[in-house]
Image 1 (cartoon, rainbow, N blue to C red):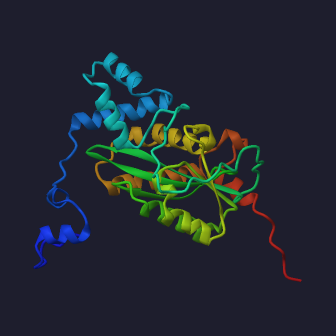
Image 2 (cartoon, rainbow, N blue to C red):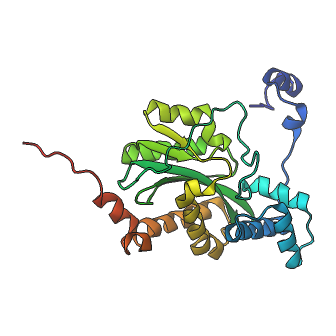
Image 3 (cartoon, rainbow, N blue to C red):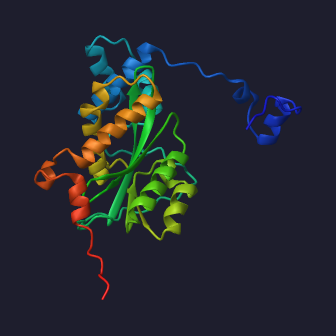
Length: 276
């Protein structure tokens, strides 16, 4: 937005755009190796104890010898986009101006592909930094339909993942997400409305409403991410592509009697009418 080569002074550009001058002059500093180590450990502990809040995580980290306070734990959790999973007032940091949609999956029998899709975002640690991953999942088969990486948390990379899934696999009847601002934004919900897809959102603090995506994150991190210290974003891209191919096409799943997710997804597609 700010063009430093433009003859208009930067101060005036900031005034026209309605942003603070400090924003234009700010130079981001890299995250230290010690902080990255803490973030990865918090991510591991969060997967193991998803109910743990800042106090419990602080105490668990102190037991391991980390000198850390509750405020720092809270800051790192916000940066990673994770929160403790339990019911309490205002657990979800949603945008106050965005509409929240009701949860449509309660007592709904989901047995066929493309009935319900789900999406979520997770933190992916790297050797020198971190990225965010958005994945689109078919609820019935649990197949990963599309995914995108980003080094920030915009809405764009979530919308791109949805567009790819729609292009490759058609459209679902219902799309379920949490109440994060990326998913409640007009750009995201407008795309679903344009496709005449019903929108469903998890209840506040109810991780079980999107449990299959949570299980995907656990498998992904323990079977791929924590085993490889990605050095670059392109390295993370290649590693995740390799894993998702394995996850969809090769890995047997106990929930489907040892069949692959790809097989379950395609075998249960509705029969297409043949020409007479």
